[in-house]
Image (cartoon, rainbow, N blue to C red; front, top):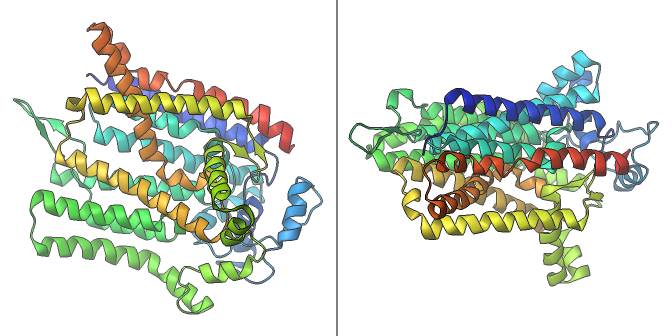
Length: 464
């Protein structure tokens, strides 16, 4: 199946990115101040760097649950003093160092800091495209569909247009994913006489690149530690197995990646141990000690019962993945979630069709199989981290699953492609097939309009 003219492909990709930045800019401007989760605390981290240097220390008094609830109920009045909201001070510093530069040059403009996150979010959209394009080099419309799905989820835009380290964390993990897939030998090229050839070794990144990026992940956000480490380890082990290298080669690759990761990111853990004591290298014990009053999972289960707890867990997670705005206080109408659910059922039906009737289309070279393992590990690690977090605190927020957005977007594109293949078989028209190749992208064309609708129909009227 032809992937289309390169100029057309990159033109459409540029259009998706520009549209994302435009929508992100609207969200950044029109979302009322402080109405993305934890935004005051993230903002104050950057402010403290400008005023006092790097990096702040989380301490008693940084979290006031009663005052924060009062602010949310009053929708953050202009005269409110937010300077003491500093409970994100335990976070790794990379996003905040970048934000502090914008803070300094913009005079602390909230909109300017939000636009920094939008720029990082645009990078996430590009990472989604390149991850899928390198796995499916001759099916670029699938990669465009993955980029579009990543770009236009309303809640994702809302988070990418708020002050917080989620945007940079997703970007760093997305880049690691693309580099790991390339390290394995993707994209493949056709070889004369049939078959495919993996990317030339001279064009692949070195294991040092994987290690350096993992070190950057260590300085960005704890939620991407596990997926970053897993996919780097898997990439090295898979390539060692595929190419039948020696144990010495394996040891060298591990040494380069682990050594650089620890060299770049390990100093932050040493700093945490120095400040908060052993074994609190991630500053999680210090954080838990400060956020007294946050609802605990055990207490919530005791209050509701396990069945009701699980029902709430899955319902709120689903709703907030797509759109539950502000500090989780503005859900969309049930109709919207129902329509999205019907769309997802249709997509899952396409995946079933693809698996049952078009298995020949799923024949993958070992390098592509390795890339699929990488994407699977990203999904599994992100889901595991979400569940683990909710074992302690009640945090039913679908945004915590966004590190898995790139592999999820690939599944969405494949599901729609399953329907395109079925239509091509039913109509048996060679002229129709090039049109059907674009069905995965066309089937997502409703999403930017929905994102715009969500901003002006739900966010602005209810949070203004």
